Image 1 (cartoon, rainbow, N blue to C red):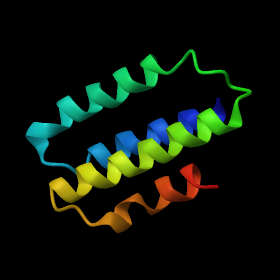
Image 2 (cartoon, one colour):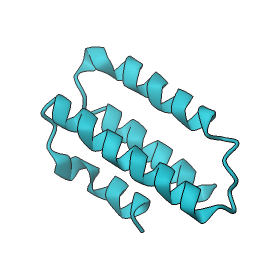
Image 3 (cartoon, helix red, strand yellow):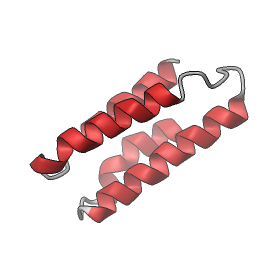
Amino acid sequence: MKKTLRIYGEILRLVRRLPKDTRPYYAKYARENFANYKDVDSNDANALDELFHRAYNHSLWVLNKYSVDESAAKRLKDICLR
């Protein structure tokens, strides 16, 4: 649970790097996605790793879409891919 909250917090930090008019959409999108997966078994390491990888990859896609340097996601990578 702690790792999940760290990932969520880091994603919200990355949202702040996006253009101002897109921030509310992506903040809401992140919140809804984390809420949708709250029922994933916290003891299923494979399922959690898959979700964390997906969160990281999707974050990179969004950053690239808005020409934000991928290095901004280094902390997220460190958390997700450990």
